[in-house]
Image (tube, rainbow over all chains, first blue to last red; front, side):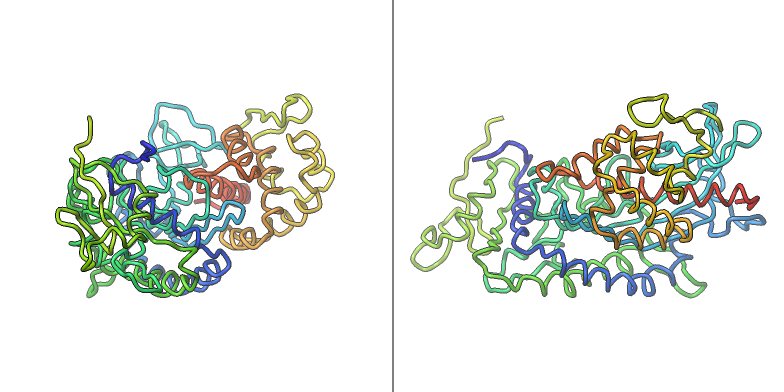
Length: 334
Length: 141
């Protein structure tokens, strides 16, 4: 039965993986490990690379004159006073953990609207800001607060809808690369190709190639903003100098190692749990013209070996990944 | 900097000026805290002495230190602080109240965006308190 919420098979694959994490989620274990990782991230990936972040995000580190270079972006004049922090937040009742790298900065803003310095939030360029000072000539000084550079979230078990979970209950969102309203992300996915226990999460490089039509896509499918397809569609500069002799690549040197570290150090050691609780479904390849196989059927086919032929191979004409198979191939009624 | 802030559903009971709001949010005056709690939507859910304990810490800590301190509190204490701050805050109280109601109700799911909004709102309140205190002391940004 299809619930009609997910727009394609990739959504359903990610949702189905996410839902299976209800058996993996262990908030105490996750929190302990994430808290321990926080110091490591601060000292290895954030503070030593502050020049890189400053250049990439186009915010001056200094907060007072004289400033060697001024950054003005989308009407935010003289972005300055750059501060970057690592934050871990936990909402136990909602089974939600966020591990984020965030920044704060000040900027001047010219507007014919009248702003009153005060506690009220305003949104400028989709960032939450507070007006601090009113200057002559309709110039106001704002503070942009807690702007996410990137963040990892872990939120299961929960009764979130399939649409919410179609981004993956565990995932990375790279807020700083936003393009219009599209924010690139990458879910943490249990590798559906491994039939052995314990299940392993997919590392960063394993997404490229074979995973594209299962958990990521470069087919321009609506709502799928996996980072690899995102960068193909919206190429941008990702490499900036950190020191005169060192260039840092945002994805290769920061995001990818952190993603893999979470996979190797935090997520992969967790599924030491009975397989009866965690049933990771086989993913189904996305083919635009073929109807969606929903999560319950993915689980059913993946766990039922009677659907294989006597030699254990999939039936001719069926696509399969890790023992799962599609029962029917029908053209979707549009 | 002088628009009035109405607290609670009864607008005339307490009115403070916006310049004072951030100080009120982190006040260490127990009687003032009790006054705000009395007009909040959840007077029976907020322990004034928990708020007093948190506020006494808050006024001594930097933004980041306060975030860590707040993150280590029991969730019940965190929720009391959310409720208290939403009583004093004028800016986004209706939207935040909606999220806090979901947070209290075990059957209501919160989206990731809502929870991020809530945590940024809370730390933003403390950040604002620190910034305005610095401006009042004559420290220029």
